[in-house]
Image (tube, rainbow over all chains, first blue to last red; front, top):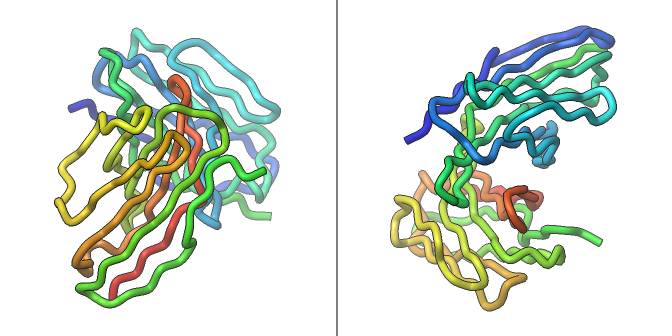
Length: 110
Length: 110
């Protein structure tokens, strides 16, 4: 099956710093999403981005489908950005199944 | 105005018991899912229903039985609970390729 690798596994930042999270995947995909799981466990859909670039406030994401990777940028990080960021992909062929990476645990210190 | 809701939020029970988790979505989505998140935060799909029809059934013990009485509800019944069933169970829904997750049910089997 498709492999999804996220890096780094852990990231510690000072408030105000910028960061880049990476997601590599092993096959062509028709679905790629970034999620944030906050410290209370809630999973929030950040981006649906199978290709191209999107921005939402301090967060932006870019997927280069031909090279099988996606990047999530967090600028001017805040303590509320802490949590685990998951990349999830769906393979071409119409499957409804999303395969999740193991996540990047982000800690933003004040 | 909760989009995807689950009950209960917490469930503590003894080994061997049978328990159910309920999920409801008011988004008008036609596909619903159950995911399991283990102690290492790894998220894996268990089941998916589209218009009350089972479309994804991963390698899950047959002690787990999903039931979808209508498009807005997907319940999960677990028989003969085992210690290894302890996890957080997330319900999700989608219309197309996006995913919207419920708050999770934290199951602890003693």
